[in-house]
Length: 414
Ligand SMILES: Nc1ncnc2c1ncn2[C@@H]1O[C@H](COP(=O)(O)OP(=O)(O)OP(=O)(O)O)[C@@H](O)[C@H]1O
Ligand SMILES: [Mg+2]
Image 1: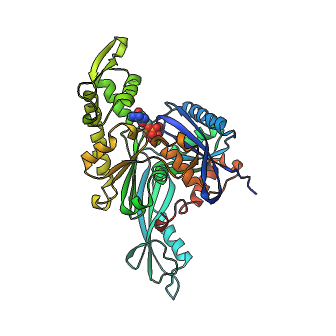
Image 2 (image 1 turned 90 degrees about the horizontal axis):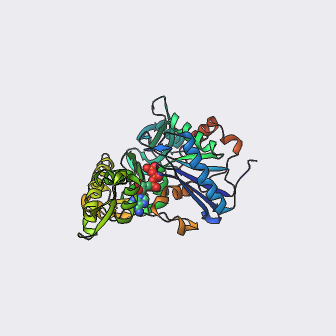
């Protein structure tokens, strides 16, 4: 019998910081947050690990803080994966229905899914997840569960997420190096979607954008199913460096000023208000109007929204995204981001904070917690896996492969 743990742990290893959450899973799928920890670090850049010891150190600090708060020791965790190197695409394959009666069986569904997921990928890439989107029976699309239907052609339509082997190995190395086993790796924009989006939004068509420090991760949902995922190399840190360069101020000061006085729309600030901005090199201060700061931030916000919307609507027409755009992640906390996006794109935009958790929710209700919270929600209900199997990467990947197709419910379940 595998040793099980009553606790669920998530690790979001972001560009700006590592977030760790510990939750107790209660009856009826409740996820009670009992501990949280964060540690800022410089071990990753734009979603990729560039310094293993620094990342290990940050994971240790974040998990220790969460452990102290929860009063338990972390053994294993669900871990988020992201970065521009993640490649995802839709794959569709057809199989003939085997039975003479032409009634679709579980075996037919299994064969169709196997065919759809066995698409060619580069040799240095692994499949991270295969998510069921829909089935097509004799040309009739939008079928969520074809079991028992009659037809001769069954097509499975899946979204395949692939990631370089080196990326997952490095992530595994860092988490294991901090003394934690990995039970599952989950694509971060999917996790954030789980925490932030409503079922209605997914049904009506929506884009989730998780604006982090180094990247913005997007997930496009159409008719209740995932249609597209992508990572855009623009995040909140570029807003900060724009301020640092144009206001000639050190980056830490630019970051502080952005959070305290920044806005993505000049109209939100008083035109005559000025702030004393420290000069680089410790050469005193100079006055800068808040309106000028907002103009700088607005230019970057505008670029981000245009790029992300172009990416989101490459395969899915904008008219099918009736619920618009939901912004989350720390970068969405900049004042006026939703208003600016509405103005630029002419669609409904809201800020999404994590929901669906209980317990200490007041301390993890900001948008920067969306991914860590979503990892808990996706990981909820999974069987615990013995620690001995999880330290070895071969074991992890065979588990990942075994879990393909059941990571997320089919479209009807969304
Ligand atoms: N109140 C705020 N106002 C403006 N920006 C903010 C605020 N709070 C956080 N940010 C920005 O959010 C970004 C960090 O967001 P988050 O914590 O979601 O990133 P991350 O997950 O570590 O990074 P990534 O997802 O890129 O790997 C930083 O650029 C930070 O400046
Ligand atoms: Mg993030």
